[in-house]
Image 1 (cartoon, rainbow, N blue to C red):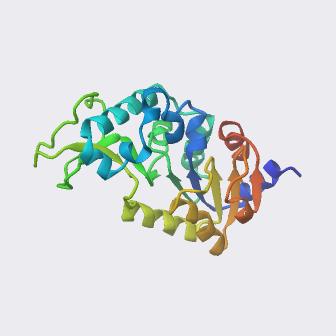
Image 2 (cartoon, rainbow, N blue to C red):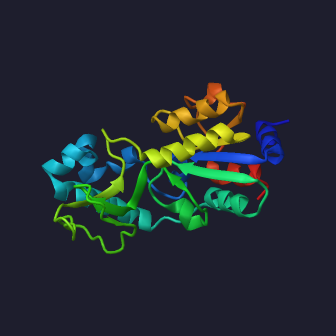
Length: 245
């Protein structure tokens, strides 16, 4: 029996599933990773200057334009077969409980039809007030490049609703993900290197709670030692096969 067949058997037998996706899932839709996006003009800037509260305070226009450029790239992307397979598996009733969490900020899981996605690192299409007054917008359609808009309530800058260096994850979102991994029968980890915490700690939490862990990645990862099965394949190919879709 191949690793893919072993993993597919675990998924067929599971009544509850927790899936965690990372940059490898979106890369197959043409979305560059944070590191890959820092090319050309952007290669000269330190990551912290582009993605930290301190960088935003120092140069709001620079940071705003960096994210506006990334939004343009994401706008051209479409969900791939892996995104679509996860959405179908959530909706077709095969699992009594299916929770999907992602480290990606591109919104492609929701575009594929997945519901209740736990976006651990936020969503690049959304914005909120840098001052924390509560103003929030969920669409980036009216957010062009240039100087960042001002908050209509307090006058502060609007900023992308993503988690920057030095910031913590939304505790409600992280808590929901932790609860899901504690109660799932199988955790499916797709396209993540396992280097970025606290998301990288979720598979260990699942394993400690008795879940089977399946890692899907064409390359070796920091999570491989935790896995019951490692499927060495790209998400767009492997996930539909694992789920029989």
